[in-house]
Image (cartoon, rainbow, N blue to C red; front, side, top):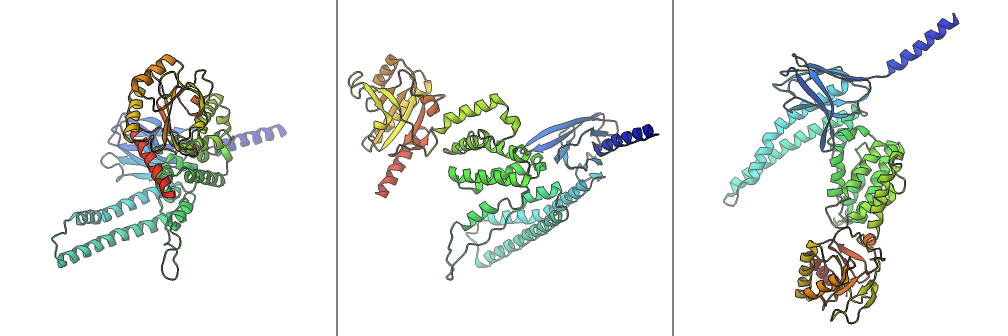
Length: 504
């Protein structure tokens, strides 16, 4: 008897385990397609990726199914002609039925057995309805603003102004209705994916500037500071389902590209702010998907930034996160990958904008002839207020164009008289080629140097993986610009000279 009871308990336990495991099963019927495939895709930032493919029968019926839950996110079902409609995949709400037809995929869409999709479909239809109300007003405003009012009399101008105010009222009213509707969803379904998506799209309201008793603004940076500190107030940074939507990644990009001042130190501070906030909200440490996906996105974003100097952010991310162990264990254990990051970090650390240029002990050519006054010198021995540090190779086709171009601009702009020296570093060891290049180009007004024994490690400290490469150094020998075309180097130097003269 005890044996029977033990077996009964064992089978009951096994049955309960299987009962708790909820697979995904999405029955689909798309009238108008038959004997073909449907794709189940999902959003991943700006990308659309495929999660599954099924065959539908002569009635357009098929089932997306699996023994495990799908990651939560905003998915899409694509027909053979790549039209699609969107659905919510949420936990544990992954068993439901979908029906529609090709005449109007969205308009005829019906979903049974999924509360999250029912709410989402209602929201989509409400949004479409409000768009139909708002569009005529937007079109009217566009036409009104495009009018040539130069010959309008007072009466016609007043009529135009009244029309604009009326159309604006329609647009504002629709916006208020949708904001109220969306706030209702966020209140009634606070843990839903839709609530998190709407949190990403909700705009923060920034108060007016603080003013004194006379109405004068007392803090000109108030709105910027408020936005910076409250931008993520409505965003659930701990909800990894947002990774598979089209709203989270653009929100991150908007914050770092458009809302923040494009100054490296300002952005670095906000990288730390955002990453710490994700750690706090997600509560999974460095293994959290929101944490690492956001960090990796920023890592890739600033690896090749759009603006000079923002690579400082890339160096910060490498040094303070990747090389400091603040990443998932699986990444730390990828030795080959981590070695590449360490190598890149070492090559970028000492040539960031704002750091002191590493000194170089190099062999110098005479400034009047090829052989007279040759000897060892240092970058730090240059006395001029400004230094343009150029690295080149005589066999480099691009160098043969850029270095003479720089030499021409150097002379045309009288930069030597303005206190600018060019420290021209030959990156190879063939002295004859070096001498011939300098002589042919008559560049004796430069400080021409090379490292005959290649022992200064300049390729690492100045990140010389190709040539030519230029750095502009100020009077403190800090790097103020790098990797610019010659004409832009001239602009930077003239700006620096003007700035210094104003200080004096």
